[in-house]
Image (tube, rainbow, N blue to C red; front, side):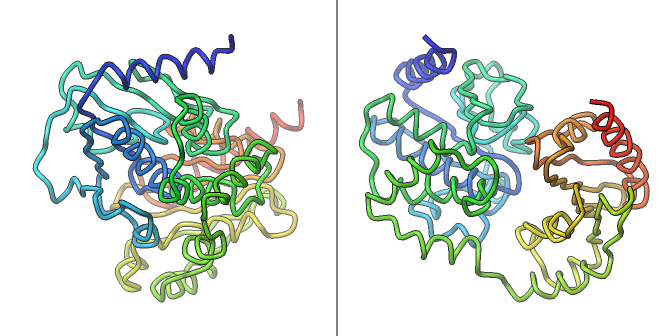
Length: 330
């Protein structure tokens, strides 16, 4: 019996032994986090459980088309409700839930469902498979193990998770298993063109305004192997951009011919910078991010640095130089 099978069984017991659940995902939720949150809510309701779904902030507008998205509470606008049983979706570490941690009762039981290689196993029960392309993939396998049928509404949520975390089925994490799941989800009536149009193709006017400011900031280093860009507080304020409008900007640098690592520095406060990292083949950016208190995947990761954008650049420059040297020696 594989370790994952054992984890699936432990997760099933966790759900069957409890009745009232708080289900949360990570700060600034993406398609996988939102789709997984909603799919988990559906699974629990199918079993007659009481469910509360919460984000630290609002659900990004691009994902509001997902069935049940309007039921997700915005913790910043709701009174704290303590829960003894919690499920986290797509959170590599407990800190990624942000202020929703205030909703966790002391000593709460926690089921951690995730796919990040840097996940530190913080749950009472951990359903984590780092080989999975998305938490939606882990959840699909969980639903299959529990022998529950997948409704069209839930299939749309899971498909969105797969689509976004594989970059539209373009990244190297697009396996035959992923495509098999996608095929199964499409058979329920999911319309792939409509989902892709909403979550991958449609951009907002503030996003376009932000892009015109960010592209001129691009800088190349390490003999052209690193491309970095920066977003300041004033850029966000003057363009009216939301956090979700920064998604994908890091790929503009990473996609330049000859670039191995793309970086986006996003100023969150006067002395706080969120760093997004993307790589092609040689650099494990999850290791770089983890060394700075962050985490993620080998090809996509992030961290937060306390300091200015210029200070963050100096820190990352040294870390990446070490990463390139390590790659040359291996």
